Image (cartoon, rainbow, N blue to C red; front, top):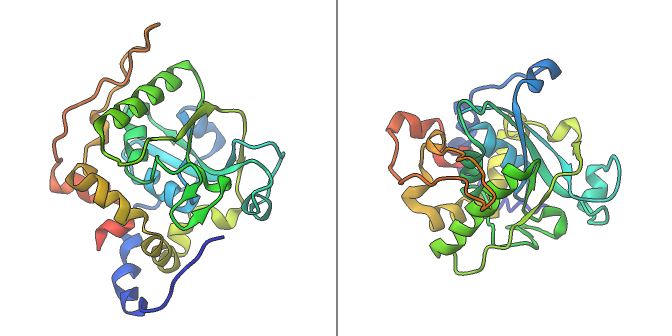
Length: 252
């Protein structure tokens, strides 16, 4: 159940009301155009937030909110929210690999959620909000595992990194009212994200390293030893690039 704390926030309406306007509108892609793109599937709690985060990354053509990782076929939002389907809220990402790599997408994921909390994310509690990386092939698996291990070794978090890395099986698109929620309901969306503490958590743990050029990450060839995802040295991108990367909360 999503909790929204309204008290004391009415004065912020003007601040947040223009946030979504800085986001470039993305038209619904046809099935034909989607077929020409690469696909990745992630979960990071509330799919409204994860969808918004990925659609702001360069090279991402569309992110679709839905459900994955469970048993029930054709689950509904109400059933998933009750926690009885085994599914978690997830996002399927369609991206141009010539612009952004799978490694770059994972770097984006780390900067929009908490990989140390497998019992939910921020306000949203329960396995139906657990974070996960659903890999579509062996290459994605190796890249995800290496990136997770590097994140663990960095000591960035006090708690261990526990995010699931599991094979992709099925993705069910969520109801239309949940698609592009951050565009359709910008005021309510920004109240929710602010009160959830999501972006405050990310700022606290990443600081200036939140701002990177995700297109600089490359997928190295995966070998039998698991070599993949060659890291790049952090360097803050230009101010113009930064303005196109943040989530709506960062535009305040």
